[in-house]
Length: 108
Image (cartoon, rainbow, N blue to C red; front, side, top):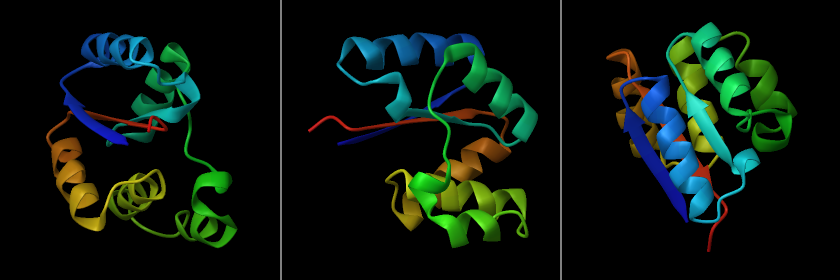
């Protein structure tokens, strides 16, 4: 099961991560996305959540993301952790508004 949650800020993200963890999700299976890469890294580090890497995307898609726009990279990463193309496109529009997207995967 994939959870896809939109929040306004890091404080709300922290609260949602704690709720997801209480539901049985592992923090390594909770991903936080932000439009700006630095913000995403800072929040991910602070909340000790998972990072989308080669194991999620595969080598070639991971390398391709270095050459594309941030929006394309984000949609690709969100698809890699379980969202459909349509869900990733909708989530990326939320990121454009300054929101954060939390995706949790792994519970059956």
